[in-house]
Amino acid sequence: MLLEYSVQKPLNREPPPKQLIQSFITKSSVAYDRNHGPIPHIDEETHYVRIDGAVANVVEVSIKQLREDFEQHEVISALQCAGNRRHTMRTEFKEVNGIDWYSGAVMNGVWRGPLLRDVVLKAGISIEGEAHVAFSCLQTLVQDDWYYGGSINLARVMDPDKSIILALELNGKTLSINHGFPVRAVLPGIAGARWVKWLDRITIQRNESNNYYQQQDYKILPPHVETKEQAMENWHLVPAMQLMPINSVICTPETGDEIQPDAEGKVVVAGYAVPAGDDGPVTKVEISLDRGRTWEETDIVQEPPTRWSWALWGTKVDVRRLLPAEGGESSKRIWCRAQDKGGNTQDGKCQWNYRGVGYNGYGEVKNLTIKGIENQPVERALLWIFPCLRYMGY
Ligand SMILES: Nc1nc2c(c(=O)[nH]1)N[C@H]1C(S)=C(S)[C@@H](COP(=O)(O)O)O[C@H]1N2
Ligand SMILES: [Mo]
Image 1 (cartoon, rainbow, N blue to C red):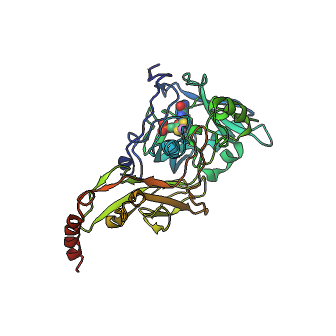
Image 2: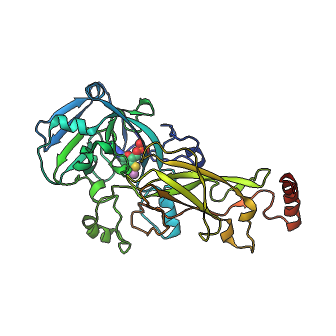
Image 3: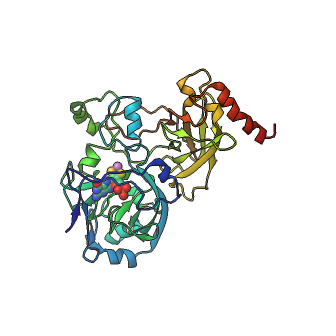
């Protein structure tokens, strides 16, 4: 079998923020890639998924069967890495452990395939009480374990309203190799780490997945845990991350940008927002030009079609309001925050944690310079403003 990349150097990349928000549905080729090992090229003719563990009958289903023997469902859902925005946690607080993601480790896709519930029912459940569904990809070694795995509650899988599917398609096309061909778990509302790609095995079991990435990673350790040794003593005390928190970021302008105002002296401020877990859609995104003293509502570009979809938002801002009135740095920052249907708000109070996961402080861009105004004598700035005023009818 062909393997691309390696255990030592897996493919991890994110699109630039401005590109990310160019379309409501993220193209497969634009979507971020997150891997803990090589990318396997699988033959869909011979591939099958085994459903085992606490089941009445162990079943092995081929890709053809997944496509033809089960009703196909479609769900529009964001997929987000638990470490998205880690860079901001690192720079706002202190060093964290993990890939230095900016805000592009998220995408919004149309996922299609059978409901996992239907496939599990085919095997039959032979366990009562609390149980978990563990997903495994046994194709390759990964950085910290001999296979990649993760799990979620069985109750969630059995609830058809949670739209948990075994995806064969993304955005109307067969899944791409990078994103899990021929089949991956799609778990709306849940951290990307559990959306196992190149799925081989689904096990119904009493406990959570034993995999490293369920047990010793992707957990929000308390802030007093600062070293690897302390982490080792604390992993088992903290629950595995499941539902993602509410979040929003500004994708344009970007930190450090030199921005060009339009004829009215305005610039577009835009980004994405994701709801908390199942509590979507996002209902409101606000920005602040004065470090949180006042907030103003932006436009949500398109009503999110499901409670797990992201929202794209935008507004136009008069850049003169961003000029450093007293030469203060703070006036050249823009913040954003979101609210969802379930009433969750992005409160800007996110704490540091060892692995840098689940960061959802306010979205922020800073160090903005404005073309044609900044670093120029006041008179020249005024010269620039007068035509604008005339244009506006004064
Ligand atoms: N088999 C396998 N599945 C995996 C991973 C992996 O390394 N191997 N990474 C997980 C993580 S941490 C994330 S965030 C998502 C990333 O999915 P993507 O590469 O399609 O964007 O896949 C998840 N599923
Ligand atoms: Mo991830």
